[in-house]
Length: 388
Image (cartoon, rainbow, N blue to C red; front, top):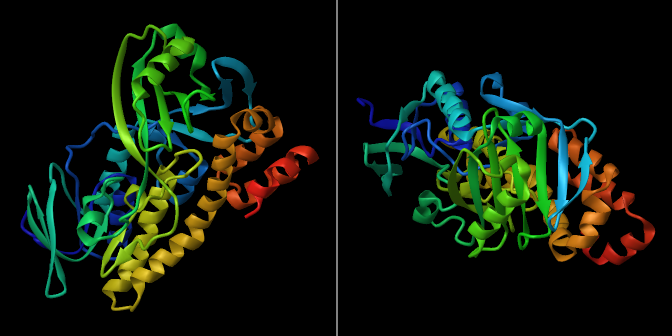
């Protein structure tokens, strides 16, 4: 690699980092995109794409979509109670190795230099520039984007996001028997009431199922047991032909903190931008990556307070919605039986959530519509929590 100096160095080539790198290149900036892995690489993730993902991308991703979910099966404490076909449900299922590789290649096509197997060792600032040491060489830039996940080394080095609320997820990719795949391929399963302050899921792919458990708790000692129990409970993944298991921290959103300072910007999981109710983060990763690029471009043009502007924009467009999601999560986890009866198995509530997932409404609208759909007695009971 001949060029060692760039306008921006992006650490992490997941959806947030690749989206940021591509947009910066479109703004005629020189960009180095680094990742510690060789692509395509595996990633612990359920792989469900909401309608918002395609809304924030300006290129076709049909080549990496494995299947589309048209109905959901809700399970509560081991009992299958409700199969629903929410109106307008729009969820695409992908596998992260192929999806992330596509986004990284799109960034490369736009002009980013992509360095794989490049682990970050150190970030230092000297004479207004950042010196970035990696296992693939040493580089220099005017700005740095931390897109390096929940345990972001970039955030630690520059002192951002010192207080992060981490949950835990354990996910398995299961190779099922052929007849199970044909029977269950359009159905997403949600398993509630067993995982403490969390839930289990079974998502279909083209040739496999993603099955996992996740919690907002920062300790999950029984994760493997819950995963094994989940596999035994569901016919579609029972007695599989093969299984591979991964785990990962989940940086659930808790409260607003500065996400940028002196030319260093945090995006995606590194910024804690994960939905506190569903655990979904891909759409927020892409959105924050593209948003950060605009403010970094301003920063490189000498616009003052661009870092604060980025934090304020994320607070306005994403964090406010997370406040509503957090309120719903607190109800769901404190009153799981009531939440299941009034929400999970309700066709009205599921149709509202389908519109959210499809990108037609945001959490603030969903929250108000759910409040108005509750029976009078239930609303009076939950009013102290629902007030925001």
